[in-house]
Length: 336
Image (tube, rainbow, N blue to C red; front, side, top):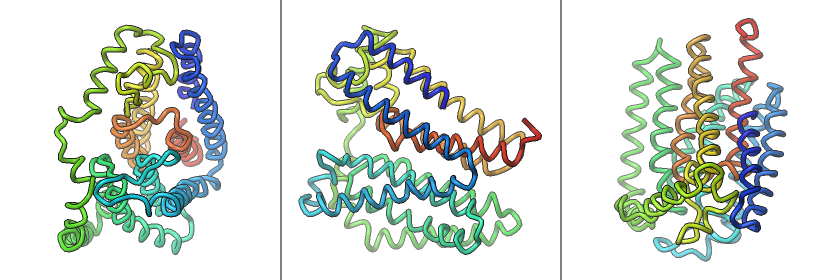
């Protein structure tokens, strides 16, 4: 939380040198909202009994987001031509909320005290694979293919092999059978849906032909002109020729707040990953492996969207980071 506050403080410095004041004002309002929500989440997560409810909150967020999409968008889209998106809901948000819900349900399957509730969340976790497929199809979000499929495999291996070494052979067999069933189901029912979707068209685009690559190159060129303080908060899209944001946290910070802002964010990520790794080595508690896995996938996600000025996207990171701290203080106070 301190490093996030430092980042937001630097954005205030960058604001003084802003290129477009109106754009900067808009982004600073977002920054204020992100700080307030992240502070509330961090404060609540310092009490262990609140943590499950906070993870459930992000699951509820996905439910309400899908309800909005169903009520306002889904009837107007032409399958294979449009994404599940409008002026209020960005299709990418559904993809990232799905990622957060997957992590939340997985963690809830471990931390809930009632065994019957843990089993329910473990069953629900399997359902996130189907949810991810349909989210990818309707949103045409390529990052789901890059994030969700590897994430699901890693979490399955963690739960049924890493955490159950005494019955590893049985669990490996079950995992192999489950993968086989999933592949069969996809070939029977999913392949035709994918072939007719906008997702396939977007996924077949070569990297060098992707607009995001051209935007990334332009952002790097812009950063050389104002490398210290950048162009000011929210100014990236007004200086990029296509007038869009970079869809990349690192590049967005680089243009908006210079190398200083970007490096603060990089250090925040590095510090989180290093902390989880050190605690894992120190305690041998595999819970920190989950936090580490989340951090690595969250790092990859930063290359596909801008997280630091989104209420729910940045606050979930703060939730996991604070959960790690609270768990360490509660279980390993003597090691501090």
